[in-house]
Image (cartoon, rainbow, N blue to C red; front, side, top):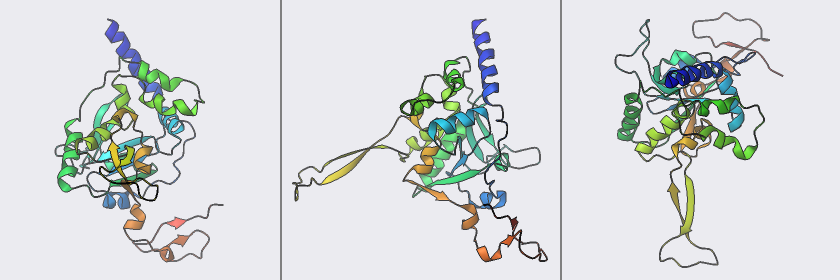
Length: 273
């Protein structure tokens, strides 16, 4: 009886946190065709979410990004009724680990982060790790993890990241980048490791400076947030519009004289003050 009550309460809190924030408008929705053409398996898709929990995560991390999903390519046997394949794997509050089509984020501001130099074997292993976890259900009875997102703002700076990682219940994994961080841990690919610098064994001090080398230490996966892929020195930012071939001379501005529009005409742009 007690477990059922806690589970029902947890689902109610999750529903509140997942409600859309009033007045939200995406800054610059991505071109869906350019985005689809640019993505490769292993890429991270960052999303500027529009829900209440998204607003809190963006505040706590001081970032545009509130959600992250991994692009794994078409997943066999998973598609929309219209035939669109599921190509993303994400952990989402209330739903657990799910797959999704790229069109889910058609109207959102997104960013693509690509692990640089990731081998094909490691890429496949990371994607397989994500796909194998589709269907994992998170225990909503641990409501402590979710209650912290209802705490009134502002939050002291020193507590913000801890607020995201606080707690030991499964919902934490469903609202941050833990699952993706675990996938990269499997192949020892760094995101934002702690760096320890020390003198190389057997080397002497030269001109008062110690010869140093860097040792990377993996942070605990619960401490990662979507913004970490954006600021990581090991992930490249991929701009789909530029990657497909951008020529500003071909843009049509709204205040320019009207011209016949062909099939390949660029969208009309408006100047923003």
